[in-house]
View 1 (cartoon, rainbow, N blue to C red):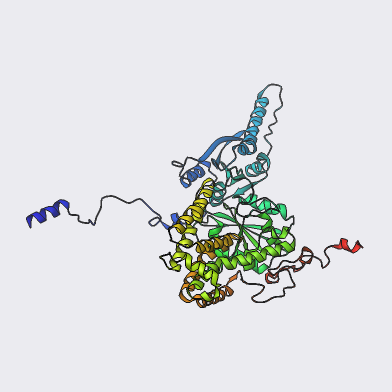
View 2: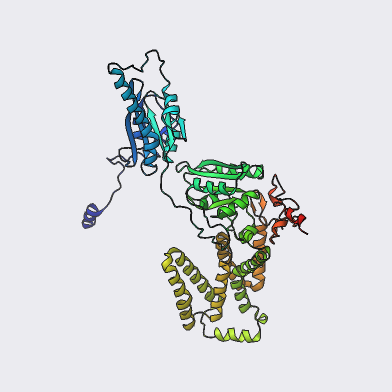
Length: 559
């Protein structure tokens, strides 16, 4: 016992109740006024404003926050002033030419006038009877020639603009700050689309800058009714989100619903349009896409002209369009640029690709396990001979290949483009051939999995393809458990769930469920350009007519 007590005293641990150190302050133990600071008014004293900004921006440890102090001459006095900006977010040449140079140039002119006034024989331009000028209006109207300048009286607005790339001018005895737009942070220039490349059509894509994205839309839609409203989302990130619509076309209820959902997001940060898509869609638990995400300005413009609403998130090159129906995800940006005969042929091909991408592996499992009578005898003997040396059941065999295909696809996306081709060759040729030679999988299964993958790539929308990749495994399991009956039962339940789905109040399978008049240009089959006279009825737009009944009036004069 003595030895046991000795070891407990030497190596035992007893939890203490009191400690002699103090934990640093966190957001949990700060006063409520510090966690949610109220809007502070800008003080007339420059020194007080600078001390507040030093505390607000942690100037002792922040290396990119710059405060430029200088003297501003007004009549016969020098007024202290300071310029606040974030290095790297502003264009220094713009600050020099549009802010500092006019102020300092005015300083030099005033000093020269004062020197001339003191020389003998010179007439002083100084008139003691001249009333004192309004310094605030003098600076705003006369000293800063920049075309984008605003006066702010609260630190909250000043900080928000400085964080966005503005510079703020503080002047002693003036109870406001002059915020000048001097954005100069670097960004990616407009380039060709990466995920939605087409042969015939515009070759421009959105970028991460929200103002460049809105200008791309303005360049296509030259109309004064095109409205772009900006809101901030995120208590911490304060991400700018632009809501775009054509006022005399879009339904007011749709616009109001879009703004209501975005304005009622209580989150700290918003970093991408993909995150916003999950926050505003009607049914977040359903994997099928309920908003259109595209990087093409021409495609967004066509949706806006049809009466929909576009949502642009600063910092991401993908723009959201609402509402969205199932047909939209089987349409390509090139459909409107091609002859309608070829477009409808491509849509038919995409419909077949959609069917095989979802059901082909499950149908293969169901046929080989339950419905061998559907296979021709010669093919059945060939499949039986190929699977004679396979030690695994067909369900295990196809799951191995499907998971392997998903791994190859994911690896090809994550590595650089120079290695993606190598990974595809290794996966398709080396691993596939080795698996067949080792009698792990049958050759017919390699064909099924490869054809399924090709059908998935034929679907234009990536979000729809991702959802199909998930449901494919469910139909494989259902085909293994109950054959065609299991697949049919699963499809029935899946279809019922999709018919109950909606996007911003629009049924997911419109215009077919509920059925509408297909004489309008709202069906899966695209009509000729001269017959696209009406906008989609399910959008309930203010202007249902998109063109005159006879749009090609020149044909009247052709004999």
